[in-house]
Length: 63
Image 1 (cartoon, rainbow, N blue to C red):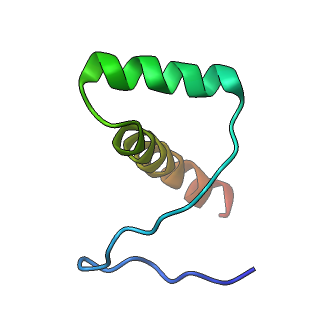
Image 2 (cartoon, one colour; image 1 turned 45 degrees about the vertical axis):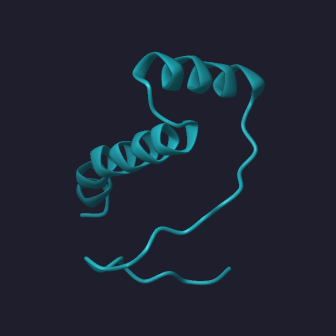
């Protein structure tokens, strides 16, 4: 697996393909429609905020 460095302030987004359960997909579609944003934008936002919330816990667990 390739190692990815930390993103700098001027890195462009990267396109990825994932497989998710149908129920998760349907929830994302419903929520993106309710919020008036694209499915891609919502998924990226949720992934990024989830990773940010996990970061302090991961740092604490590695001490």
